[in-house]
Length: 177
Image (tube, rainbow, N blue to C red; front, side, top):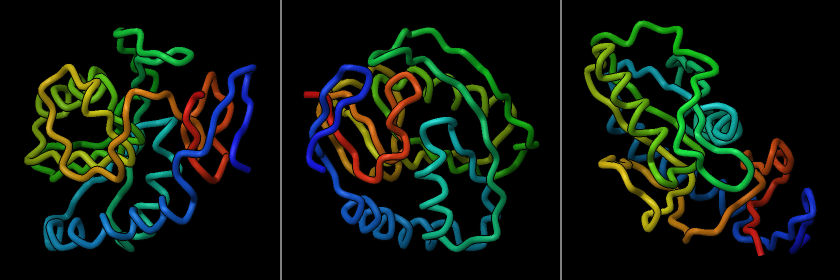
């Protein structure tokens, strides 16, 4: 389907399932080489990155551990600027090579604060891998190491992205009309 309606909002298709999976496979190859022999700890930023993290972990085909955290700053279709930690990190990151799997880097407020947190816990290195990035919206000094797709400021749903919890299960990614 080329359009969907969720919670009274209309969305049009932005990226297909095949485009998404092809790009994840492309990103996995250089990441595998970079992480070879480094014993990484992958951290999935819930809830949105769960589907992307599963896709990426399968593409990497690695036995490395995958931890889950839930930090958020979004409500509805926009960032509140306030960070809420709902699920803390339950792994010791001291001396570890951390790879953060994130669905989208928008303003960067959540990612910036999480990176600072992980640095204080003693991580050896930190890489950010995201499916979508909105470079025009980033307001914090963060470096995204691997980006699936750069998009404009449009709000998106599908393939893990949601609006108030709805739309995550859509195979494709749609943008707000």
